[in-house]
Length: 256
Length: 356
Ligand SMILES: Nc1ncnc2c1ncn2[C@@H]1O[C@H](COP(=O)(O)OP(=O)(O)OP(=O)(O)O)[C@@H](O)[C@H]1O
Ligand SMILES: [Mg+2]
Image (cartoon, rainbow over all chains, first blue to last red):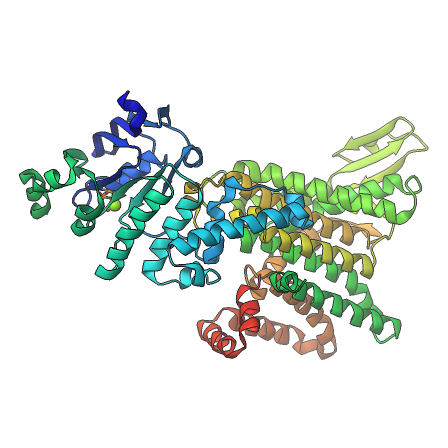
């Protein structure tokens, strides 16, 4: 029965690049609605784990289950349709599209009209586009990006670009949101706001969030449980406060 | 209504410019203010404009390099001319036959775009350039050795010579190898060209502003991010590329129905033509559909306007090319333009900023 409350179940996940075992026997079990942290020193394999979860890399071994469904080996786009959306450590926006259009690309699979309807500007085109605009503006508002909607994504300051990535990921209506260092490059004030926003969207959109972060304040502040990776392997896992007291974890961080 | 205008401002401005130019030229033609040489240039000019805007869909919107756009034009030209020759006198009136010819050019060129794009666009990396380059040359050469004839027994095809078609006495050669197709009905007019430009522009500009167009531009900007939000990359690459090829086919229809004898030479359907169209696109601004229209017109008409200056003609042409390139692409010129734009009232600023 425990499975019913589990959204993401990862069993013995591994991948090697040449001789390097970037992710080595990773096990994860994340409950619905949980805010879960994945931490570890540089090069520990955190981003690689995200790439495995989203189908960018195919694992050498292991199984990934989302909501009971085996999604191992699916294409990235099918994994997104199954309910996983992500952001990127090195921001990947559609830089020449407007902020609004970046989010509307995220809405792509939830709204439909034919090519012909678009070219002939039929009523179905106008109706659906209006719905997409409304939805996109709603999402932008959550992140304080409404006023920037018609700017090009590349014109946004760094912190807002990170927020736009989250908004775009949310637009796909995911069950599980993966955030790769969402606070990187933000000042303490921005980080604090971001923490509030993450908790807020988790509740508002009934999300489960798995996040990679180096900012220990953020991790300690919002993550309920943690997994610590080191050299691709799980070093520790459990409730945040316990894990952060673990001597091995402290050594791994100080040792780098 | 006001909302409708502001949302579609860029499209309407682009269409307005084209319509305005059409009216001016029509008036000049009516008043005899245009030389016959110039008049002869009008239909090809329309074809070049369509070629430029359609190539910009591949290069600027999809972000892939195509070096064989003239190959798709060639497909459109030959399939439609063949069709018109076959059905002249069968389908009436002439304009209806021409409409069918246009559809045939569109469909066949689009089909070839699809067939070429299917394997190539799946690959990561810039393979499209090399494959389209080869395709353009192959199609051109194939057209030079293709013989098709018709007699009471039906159609005959050969890639050797006209004799090996084995036509009966009443037989008629439709495609005669290097001599191509002669006697295609002259259905293309400047007005037809104008209408086709407008239709091409509406198709492309509306496509860009649709969910599928956004998907195409998302792929151009970041493939990995596009996949992460569920965009089927191959599908939308193929869609944009096939549409671009199909519209090049329409340009081919216009071109072939303006000629008494249609031959596939290096100049009209070969590498030279493909590069020339690419030059239009690059100088007009990659991704700027309006820019493609303007640059295709200027760069087609300029050599003719300068004809009087015979010796200096190519020199001036080269200088204009360089000037356009500097104006469109040099960092200082772009900064200068950005400063000018920043001084404009908000509406105009937005129009220029978002121009596609
Ligand atoms: N495609 C790849 N090919 C080869 N090696 C790779 C590849 N991707 C990741 N690696 C290697 O795998 C290891 C883990 O990298 P990863 O990016 O997952 O680390 P990380 O935990 O996200 O680190 P950081 O905190 O610096 O972002 C590194 O040694 C990296 O060089
Ligand atoms: Mg990383």
